Length: 226
Image 1 (cartoon, one colour):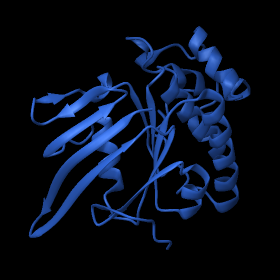
Image 2 (cartoon, one colour; image 1 turned 90 degrees about the horizontal axis):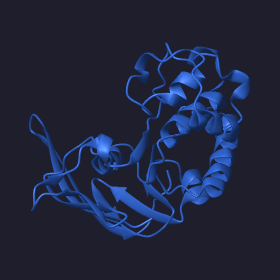
Image 3 (tube, helix red, strand yellow; image 1 turned 135 degrees about the horizontal axis):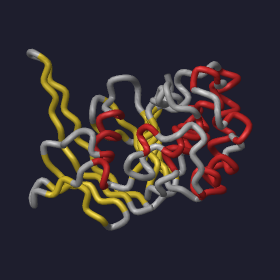
Image 4 (cartoon, one colour; image 1 turned 120 degrees about the horizontal axis):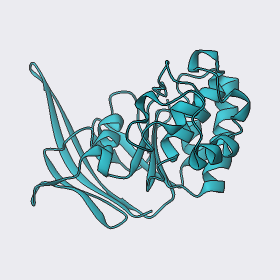
């Protein structure tokens, strides 16, 4: 994956100001953006996804310009060909596993039948070992099953990159360890590039082929353990 980020963003809340200034390039398949809470990690990830517009700069993914303030380019999120996995997974509670995975694959699938069948859905049910719970709803799933469902939904449209927002932060330590191992195995097997943000040094050690360390909105030379 070729990713180039060179952006600036200032957030204002009353008299408070937060300045994000980020510049890096990477060809790694596994990029970790590390920093303590409030370092600017989520802002950076949302900028790549198109969920936040920088004040200035440029973002390129796979030699495709996603954002360029100088030329007025700002590709909408749904056209960036990236998948964003929220920390809470953001599964649709009224849709079962099969429907969640199929959401967004085709127009009109917002209210798809509960037993909807599609070659792509079947592939991801198999890849993530979810056939046994395909007709269950998010509330009926374990933490690991919810994460795998969210990953399957994110990957089904074949994005160019997977963006992960603190994917293990809400899990207990034992489940966090298992989910790291599963994500590691899946990412290597599927060869999907990913950008993961975290405040946990263990995530850095596990996934940090290229580590970008943020502190107070600026890149620093190395990460500082909590």
